Length: 143
Image 1 (tube, rainbow, N blue to C red):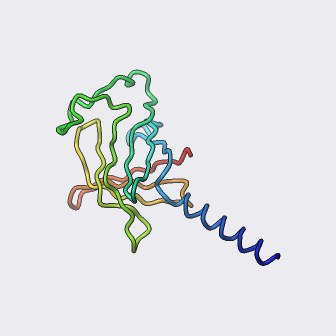
Image 2: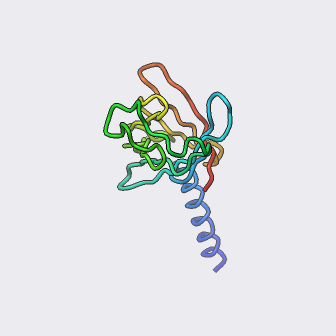
Image 3: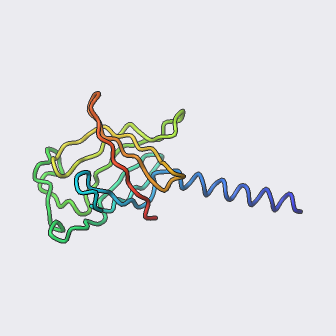
């Protein structure tokens, strides 16, 4: 009986740890320049593909901002509620998700993206890149 209970506890904690090591969840983004909280982005999964949308903008003055520099269907759309992460999938051989894009609503540009959970899933390293040029951001898990 003790063995069965121990196995169940181990299976449950291993599953919970794996779930936290996934990018799925609510993340606080940090401004590169000011190092202040900028927004909340919710990453969700459907059929193994991740997407992320802006759920909250911290600065009250930017609540109604639109992506006037976007060059796709998001041009002129409100940034709040906008999908900024698309098409990201788990790399089977590595501890990161990649293959999709991330939009920077400030400049309207889309970048290839790689997302790597850090610190047991409490942080998410988000790398946007074009060729050899890249920029990393550290997002903090909210839930």
